[in-house]
Amino acid sequence: MIDTSKISEIAKNAKWYHTIKLTPEIETNGVYNHYQYLQYYKFPNSLEGLTALDIGTGDGFFAFEFEKRGAMAVTAIDTNRFDGSVAIKPSPSFEDSYAKKYDGIYRTNISFESIYKELGLLEPNLFLIASMILNSKVKYEQISIYDMSCDDQFDFVFCGDLIEHLKDPLGAAEKMRCLTKKLCIISLSSIPDGADNNKSLRYAGNVSGGSFFNFYPGTFREVLLASGFSSVKVVSTFGLNSKRSSNNKHAIFHCVP
Image (cartoon, rainbow, N blue to C red; front, side, top):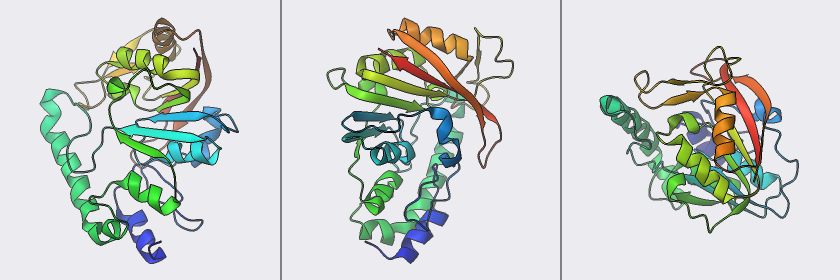
């Protein structure tokens, strides 16, 4: 294990997306701190004996949470290579700004070369850094949801705050259905104002370039039902605060095959 002073340094100064407790005393300086919002997701208290998939894992907060809840095997997937390349496919008119964003993140994180190399890593992959410090057994794969094989099903599937960043959210929903054996939980973020107008959506691809379809909960429920889930329930709604914004409206869906 590396020295705690080095853990504290990278936890505080690297560009973390998630707040993750690396030790009882040290947590990462993430944009999002999900610990205080966990109750809204209505995760099973125990995942003992189950296989779990975390889609769009980011730094791994939820994957590590599922491991703590006893899942016998957790797979975490993401398209972020942590090498400065853009992890999503933005609108063409925003490609330059996203290239600069990811390059800036990489330039900050690569400055901790001595720390991640001490852990045996060749590049500043924050998921793997957190995993090694936590002594986690989560399996990490750099793969898109669209490229997952339906032959590899999981008892429990989770997709957090990814839908609005996908140009083909319908294809992703259908793939989640085919990957799910027992329960799929999806966190839908960036719900537009006026969400009581239950069956509509907003296109945002010309605003940020990296978010596309902002669904109202009722609309997205129809998408999930059409994808083959037999039961789809919105179990909670809440506003998620971050260091960038406040009251990002969320809805949590529990979907049964």
